[in-house]
Image (tube, rainbow, N blue to C red; front, side, top):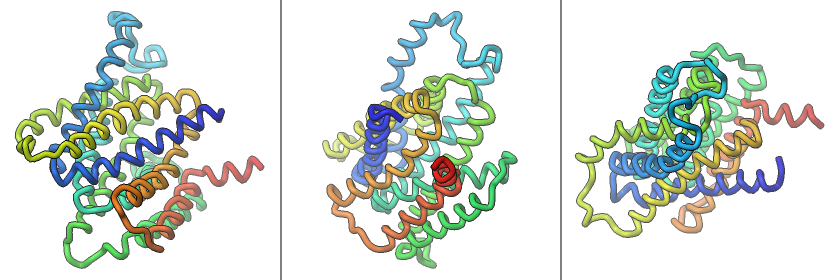
Amino acid sequence: MKPSQFLELVILAAIWGASFMFMRVAAPEFGATALASYRMVFAALTLFPILLYYIIKNNWHTLNLTLEPNAKTSQQVIGHIFVLGITNSAIPMFLFAYAATNLDAGFSSIMNATTPLWGAVIGALLFNSKLSRLAVFGLLLGFIGVFVLSIDKLSWQFTGQVKGILAVICATSLYGLSANYSKRNLTGVKPLFIASGSLFGSALLMLPILIYTTPALSTISSLAWLMLISLSVVSTGIAYILYYRIIEHSGPTNAMTVTFLIPIFGVFFGYVFLNEQLNSNILWGVLLVLTGVLLTTGLLKKRNTSV
């Protein structure tokens, strides 16, 4: 990876790490449903001019959605992208917004790093993917890390924090499902269409809901609006473009390393701007989760064998 490409990766990690801070500030005022709905609509509007420019530049009538000629019909691609919009955007964004009303930003950013673990589990259970013994050990290590991270928040009662943890687990599980679904059904589809199409689909789905869930605008502070716009435009719309740009120029394996950088920024922003506390559970949890992800994805093994 060139220095300029690594810089893009760090910028993306900072943008996505900041998204948890944005949600933590905005969610209590907007509510989970309205926040997630606004996020998808504003992000889709951010990507729309870019998509429109691309379509006009490449001639709408001859436009092919796939990189591979005749790989899939446009109707099939649009159908799969709509499904992806629900499983990878609409529901997870709502779940993370709900979690933000109960959990620290740093905690949620660390839990988000378990996405590759869920991707491996779901791939093995539903998509016939193979797991090596080292990957299974990585899964075990990663989920132990989740337990260590959450141990001071767990309770036999169905508290807000317990609900928040379950919401994040469901969201990251859906991310894992979406990754496998996309790999099976959208391989060869141009990344810009996947990013923008999934957001457009989820935005259309949530737009009617937004009309009935928006709180009285007079009760929303200017800071909450600023956090929402930053979350939607920067941490979603622009971040999607940057992420797929990294995939295109550096490959999916290098792009996946952003997973390890996001919690660093998420915890840092939460500590500096929201006065969130750091403790030994967080430090050990981060170490176990990220080590588990390294082993499960094979990145640690690949690095060792290349030396």
